[in-house]
Length: 310
Image 1: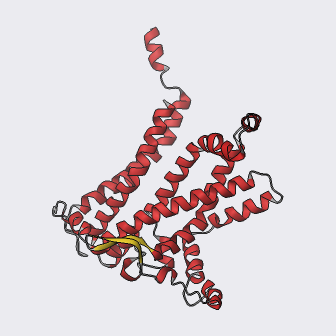
Image 2 (image 1 turned 60 degrees about the vertical axis):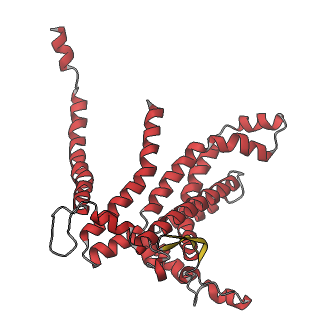
Image 3 (image 1 turned 90 degrees about the vertical axis):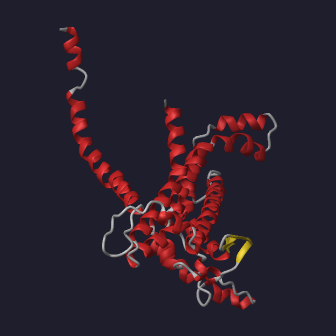
């Protein structure tokens, strides 16, 4: 009898209620997330590259086509350098601004709201605004022309420190810097909020003890503050990498693919390939490559967090 009572007590009424509430969400996630990912993977291995569905097996043909395609090679180059520059800019600006606000300056709330405001805008709005600001014939350039400076911004097709790699010149496209400026302007507030919360969570006693031991402010930040902020930096890197690897709307609104695809990214290529060209298998292959790129960042992070919690 005791064993039976124990078995009956395995799930209480509240637990069954929780399972009941969670089940619909789990079913929907399985269908609309993992089900659609599986469907996309299946389509990427098919011959469906016309408006009429063709599910005959094509193997890796679509992937081999992509990695030999000049545009997709350019997209991978742009995605790589955009991700590096974007993450670096957001971390650097967010950390510096957080350190300044942590000094409890006058009007801190006002400045904090100003820095966080861009996050309230959509990437489409940001793209349109910065498209005007950095347009070679309008915006900021009208002011710069008075000093004899006429930057091309996102219309510049030059490649910095480039070398030939396959069909493309491998280096930092100058036009990508314009995209980095616009996207970092919008997302720096996120890093600012994260770092400011981290700084406020570090006990003041640690800094005072270091000062009493003769440490300079630079040494305090280098030896005490920054190591304490490593988990926050990791979170910011993961979030920004997730955004940068699948970015579409800002570039679509701001520049489009650009001349010689200098501002093109896989998300934009996938949209045009799938919904304008009706090359569904090619578009699905691009989507799977983007998924794998995001997984490279996300999966190790989640795995480490799970190990730390266990």
